[in-house]
Structures are given as structure tokens and as C-alpha cells.
Image (cartoon, rainbow, N blue to C red; front, side):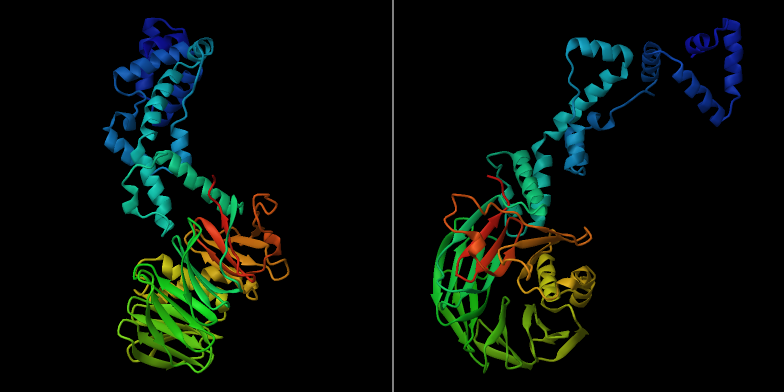
Length: 467
């Protein structure tokens, strides 16, 4: 301190002692003002001397994170997002002449570089990038489970994260990277369900097909009548389908055997829903019928003019033209009703939302009504009939009725509901079909792709993963 005051005030040693005694009687704010003025007038070398003096007293710059055990440092860095991790690994690179100039005028830079190099090595720890991969895949149910993440991927955790991150960027910007076609149906696709890498489609060609969308292979074909709707449970290995001729069917996905035929409606079935024990369907005849598909017993016939149904545990949700109702499966009594004017778009969002959360039957009514605030912003799309949601990432894909049917629009919630046209390589010479000639009838979306069922029977896969 004496050295700097002497330089700053050009005083004798006696004068310096006098100045120090005056400094000691300064209050906190006066000391701050004095020290700031002093530091501003120092040369870089004098600042370096001051830094050395502070470090001797352990008052200088100190990298707390870098001095911790590696396990603790990694735990701290796991809380950073990708942008923060990239910022922490920035290392200033110099050649010797430039480094000499910078160190003369800014000796603190040497310490900064040492810290950056230490942090850079921490950010390369694979544990951090495994955690980041799991954060993405937690929202992408059905793609890769946590149990599948025990083995180190061939490309390494960091490169896998980059791949997943780029896929999300492509998705949110509506940039399709690859288009594939699944061929097999000979007539229009009437309904489709996508869960993980399994796609089940029903068609007017009197078949239900099970597809592996990763390989593009049709794994099995079930035959019957003109199917109106489908559903399946991957965990129970069963698939169900209903026809325009009143009947519903249940097959095993493993043995491919017919497990049961369910009759009771007098008109075409509009929607079917499966749970671990029950199967429910609604019809144009104004009824909802529930069966125990394991025993084949009819549980209840509920009078309800339903457009769509969904089973959640022992509750069945029903959508009519202007309200949502909840019925107890065991006795068919109505236990909840609420006005609902959001139509099939609102219903679809709620179903996707309930599918995205754990234990959706717990406090289902508050869960359902809380999601209505999101779909209020979609009210001007009420006339759209071909659409689907990815509620994990707040994406809404639809076909605008005033545009060609192969033109898809993407809306991201939280961005003022602004829509953008989805771009795909429709002029790719490697494609053996012209996507612009297809008429989309069904849409399913997940974290990796859009699946569109067409009037021709073709299934179009629009994928966002980079090769």
C-alpha cells in the first residue's frame, strides 16, 4: 500500500504515514472511492504487483470450482445449460508474440487462461454430457429409456448430445432432413397411432398394419373390415381396432392371435381406447361401451353422445360437441362434467398432455382444466381437422385447409403462436414418390419425426435427425 500511495501522491515516507492515518479514518464509501481512483491510475505492472500482494493474503482471484474434487465440480457444471458449458470451455489461444503483448498490458489474463483450461477439462467429462442427454430424452418418451443409456454410445456422450440438440433445432425451425415412405396399404389411411418406434395404422383396405418406423418394415398385417379407428398398448403387447360395421377387435402383437371380438354398438364406431384392463368405444348410436378385454366381460353401457373417449385407470373421459364428461367405469355414473368448446383440437391437446405426465389419473380434473389455458391460443384453428401435438416440446402440427394438403404448418407454444411452414426436400431425386401429390389424412408427431397417413394409403415419414 505504501508503494502505491507514494507513487500516487509523490510523498515522502513521513507524508505517506500521514496519508495512511487519514485513510484509516475514512468510512466504507470513502475508502471505495479512494481505492477506485488509485487503481485507475496504476500501470499494468503495478496492478500485477497488487494482485501478487493480495494472493499472498489469500484475497486475490480464486477458482473455487477448479479446486474442488472432480466429482463435485462435475455436479456443479451439470446445472449449466449447453450455452453455459460452451462458454466455460472457451480457451484463449495465443502465439508467443501476441501473448507477450497481452501479458504486459493485462497480467491478469494469465490467471484467466489457467482457469479456462481447468474448466475446459471439466466440461469434457462424459458424466456431464450423459446427464444432458438424459435431460433431452426424459421429454422424448419412447425414443431411448434411461436403462438404455448405461452403455456408452459409439460416438460418445457429447456427440450424441450434439446430435439430439441439432434435431431439436431442426424440429423447432421446421426443417425436415429426410423423407421416407411406408408402402403396403392399398386404400386411404383412416386412423394411426404412434408410440415410440411402433406405428399402428388402420385403413379402408380392410387391414390394420403394425410398422417399425425405424426400419420401415411392416411387422404384421391384421385383416377384417373397413377400420375406422385404432389403439394399442406397447407394454401389454395388444392392438385394438374398430370398424364402420359396429365391431371392435383385439389382437396380440406377439402371437398375432385374435384375443377377442367386442360387439354391442348398432352403428359405426367413432373412437376406441385401451388401458391395462379395459377397452372402451364410442359410436354414432350415442353410447359408450366398456369391456374388460382380459375376461371379455361387458362392464358398462353409458349413454353419451361422444365424439372421442379415453380411459385413464378406472375413469373414462368422454368428449361431446360442447362438454367433457368423466364416468366411473365400474358403474357408469357421471362423476365430472365441464363445458368445453375447444373441440377436437382441445381434446387432442389434453390427451397428449395427459400422456406426457406421470400418474395422469391423480387429480385429473385440475390437470385437464389447467391445460386449457394453453389451447386458448389455438382457438382460431378450430376448423382444422388434420393435426397432432407434441406436448413435451410444445409443438402443434396441422394442415391448413386453404393450402395443398401436403403443406404442413408448425406452431410453437410460447412464441405468440406464430406459425411457420415446414420445409422438406420435396424435390429430392432419391425419392420415388412425389410428396406434393399426396393428400394427408392423419398426422402423428413425436420428438424425431412427423408421420402422415395419406389418402392413397402411403405413409410419409418426415424426419428431423441429421444423417
